[in-house]
Image 1 (tube, one colour):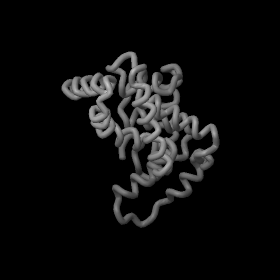
Image 2 (cartoon, rainbow, N blue to C red):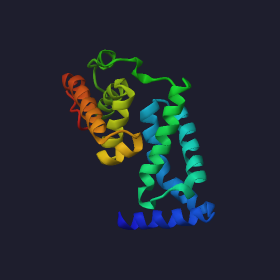
Image 3 (cartoon, rainbow, N blue to C red):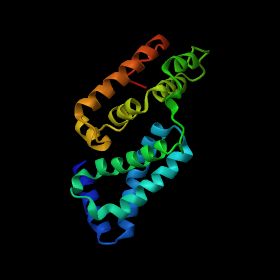
Amino acid sequence: MIFREVEDRDLIQKARRGDVDAFNVLVSRWERRVFTYLVRLVGDREDALDLAQETFLKAYRGLARLDDIERFPQWLFRIAHNQAMSELRKGRLPLSDEDDLEAAHARTAPAAPKAPGAETSLIVRQVLDALPPEQREAVVLKVHEGFKFEEIAEITACPVSTVKSRVYAGLEAMRRHLEPQGVKAGGN
C-alpha cells in the first residue's frame, strides 16, 4: 500500500507537469472504484459512466489545485460526489429513493433460489437503492469503498457526526429489511 501511494504521488506530480500518460495511469487505477461508487449512487450504469468521465476530466483540469497529494482519493471522490449531486439536483438523473424500503422489501420476497450469492447481492442492492440518497452514499463510501468517517465527511462536505448518523441509520434500515430475508446487513 505504501508503494502504491508513492506511485500515485509520483504520477500526480508528473501529470501536473503535463504528462498525460501519467494521468492516464491514475485514471486506470481509480476508474473502476469511481465508476462503481457512481453506479451505486445514481443506480444507472450509463449515467455513472458519463459522470465518471466528467469526474476525470474535471480532475485533470483541477489537478494543479490539489493542495495535499496524499488526499487525492478523497479529492477525486469529492469531484465525483459533486458531479452526481449536481445532476440529481438538475433532475437529469432519477432519484432511486422514490421507492421506499417497504417497496424494496416487497420486491425481495423469497423465491426459489437458483444462485444464492447472486440473489443475495440483488436483494442487498435493492434495499441499498431504496435508502435515502444521503444514507445510501454514506453506506457505499464506508462499506464498499472503505473510507474512514473523517474522509467521508470531507467527500460529502458535512460534519463527521452527520456521516456517522447516516451510516448507522442506513445500516440499521438495511438490517431491518434484510434479516427477514435471511441476509446479514454487514455482508454480501
